[in-house]
Image (cartoon, rainbow, N blue to C red; front, side, top):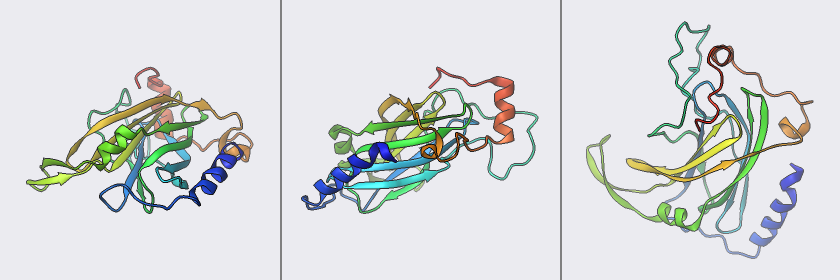
Length: 223
């Protein structure tokens, strides 16, 4: 990871001069990822730069949430039920984890493989102070899951990754509607997958997604 090594080292040095504190009213915030149906992705790394100057390298990696193809499915379906066009109106929390010990994020660096192309992208997603303020603010809301009124927090950042290097981020929370943070156009990583250590080879696309793309193509421009 030559491109961000100096940045990481500088941030760590600066963090040594700053007392680490968490500015949110809860123990930890969550980072999650998802991809449109059949548009498979492999996240090589998602690094978090938090508000107190600390860096959390590879806070999330691996496969994001995806509705189709289904996990453990076998064979090519006769009918493709997934619809990859556009973003969902009500997305979940994605696949990820809580970034424990971190303050609210100021920037998230993501490098991922878009398996349908295949291509490797990387980008930085800025989280402005206005969004961090939303994440700190409790909101009285009725939760249908429990049929109770609660004070909820938008303590999760969810990022969608789509072909063409599109990344879109929202902030959301239990029983609260998502709020869009930003949409960014990532750059192609010139060294290729795995920091150039795989000879240019990306992870393989599943047979189901390959069959879908051969039949319907990739809906570029819908994200």
